[in-house]
Amino acid sequence: MKYGVDMQFGQLAENEDVVAIFDQYLPGVRGMLEKSPQSAGLSIRNLVKYMGGRIPASVLDGMEADLQKLNTPENRISPSEKRLIAHFQELESERKAKEEATAINGAVHHQDAIYPGQPWYDTKGQRIQAHGGAVFYESGSYYWYGENKEFTDGKNGIWTWGIRMYSSQDLYNWTDLGLIILPVLDDPDSPLFPAKRVERPHILKCAATGKYVCWIKLSGAEASFVIMEADSLTGPYHMVQEEYKPQGKNLGDFDLICDEKTGKAYLYYDADHEAIVGMELAEDYLSAKQVVSEQYTALHPPFTREGPALFEANGFKYLLTSGMTGYIPNKSDAAKSLAWDEPFERVGNPHVNDASNASFNSQISKIFRVEGKDMWIAMADRWVVDFPVDAKLADIFTRTIASRYEPEKYQATEEERQIMMESPSLETANTAIADYVWLPIMLDEEGNPKIEWRDCWKIEG
Image 1 (spheres, rainbow, N blue to C red):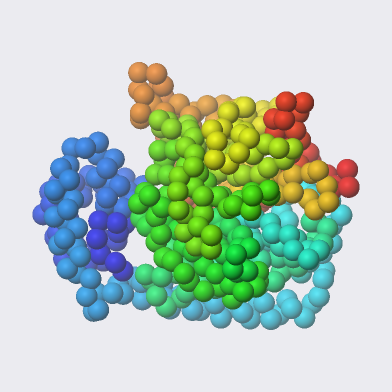
Image 2 (cartoon, rainbow, N blue to C red):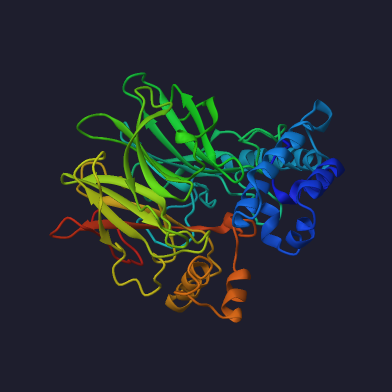
């Protein structure tokens, strides 16, 4: 465990010295925060930030200095982390045994269409575990990769168990290729430790180096990028950068894209919930070198934009985003531009006739083109399948969250606040059973993206 103001409030009790330091600098605050379950997963830094500037910066600096002194070898692994390590190693043994057992069965599942919002199984009949994912096309095959959530039940503290990949020739039937990025089970400070919030991997092949470069979001207190590199798409990947922060800002969701004409690669990311920032990548794709665009500035939750998904078609560059409501889905927004380094124009919600006002109860993670066709697919996650959102519930979440920032404009009743408090949160959602919503993107006469609901559809039309 790394001691400092970026550690989670819920970790304080692990060490009496930490508790004493916290109480010394913020007397009386701990008792108040312990009454709020949401506080446990937030960093001390963010909790102080949410107090609205009432705590001087010098207090946080002093606490940080004293907490850093506790980073000694004997304090490196806390008692709870030792228990987690033992538990994780048991789960890995079980996972490997299950993998060996299913390997001998061969293909047992086949489908001839895409069924949005329904459980999607691989050719072995197991739930596909590639959440917050993307698709890479190479040598006649599609490769779908993403967060392996097979153990993430919202109770055991597991966020992601490595990055899993599948292959397909038809986009319907997917063969499990296993974990291309393994979890690190014995080091709680590794960004790949299963309790760390590894999310939304994106892979580009770098023309300059021939390497496959994978950027991964590390959310939570670190709020940074993990950057890895491999000689092959399927790995093995090795670490290049940990806790990388372009512009020194905390980051949220992101996407990567390579311009079809210029070959330049770009990063678009949620920069500390202040804006969607576009940056050109360095020639080796291992860092971001300069800002080229800023969109959606001066917004507050739930209107702050996150979940950027990029694609280009018919001369336009497109940026689709979601609002900020955790795992509860919300209304998407689309914007377009003539170049990745030029301003984007908002063109509205791409989801047509969406009665839920919640992007068909999903959040887009990536948009990719079907090889050889003028067809683009928006791949999205339905994170909380047992908590369907309708227009009424979407309105409650919008007003309740917005009322914290503009109480004179947005109001919510105590009953509505309670509804939001009891909804699935990032820490409690069982995403092991999350489903996928894949839908084609159509472009209207003005070149604006439109997504319509389909219970079942085929690539062939």
